[in-house]
Image 1 (cartoon, rainbow, N blue to C red):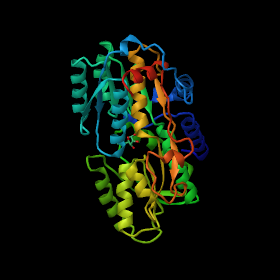
Image 2: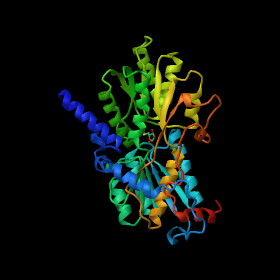
Image 3: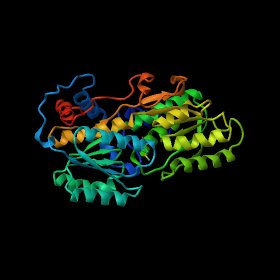
Image 4: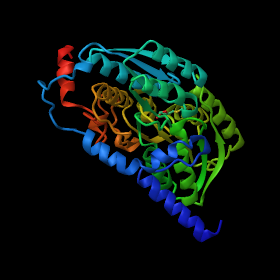
Length: 384
Ligand code: SR1
């Protein structure tokens, strides 16, 4: 591609991701349409759904459809890792506050199994379905059947774009750019980096769009190695894959940084770097948990920055959109939570946890997103 054209393409990519973005990976093709509309829809959705700071009236009338205890199914592609466990706790806690019951189905990274779980939930006549990860090609048919049967569906980290579904995300484009921007600044726009990545997961596909644009934007940053797989042992696998890379690049200064856009990747890579005593390499991650904070706060930890939202809040927001749907309220087609970048130097000496991180990171977390007036009353009715 000619230099001028390349620059134009790059500028376009950057302006698109700055606006909410598109997904250029073939395996995430269904994202394109949704992502193209994301900018305006997000803004509209956030204007209409984000009631942060407002006190909801406790005596608002509770819609009839949500007055009885509801049966909710959460269909998950996988449940390993600290992100997934925090997400599930957010789902369970919000459903409990609303007086409902949630059955969590874990497909252990098997998309066919995930589709079977979806079918089971539909056959059981649940009141609403939450989808976590998975791919449209495996789930579209089941989701359409649920919609046809009047069962509302809200997805997270999925590329389904069927009409009637609300799809939430952590704004993966911003997550990736937040941490990569920090990486670029720290190495002054030049150096050797390692990329940890696995295809076929919607959030990782979206983050990869930004990574590809990042490499174009910083031609003096060279990717010297790439690996990655998602399994029940992602952190351990990443550790041994990074150990192999370190053996290949044993000289001090031969690797400047690792971009590890999933905390299970970042944990494994960090351990490998620490064990090899390579204090010349820094890790830039995505996601946050108590365990991640502990690793980042350890003395001389290579993990210096991460971009994240609160996974428990993601789960709770998804449940609230589902209850809004069940109550017959309008919900947006797309909603993206706003991530924050957390750097080691923002953290104090004392141990920080997810419970008090908001004291150290400006604008951390979002409360009251998708919170209808009657939700407070429903929670109070259920003794919460
Ligand atoms: C394999 S996908 C892993 C990602 O899913 C969630 O979006 C988390 O942010 C995690 O990084």
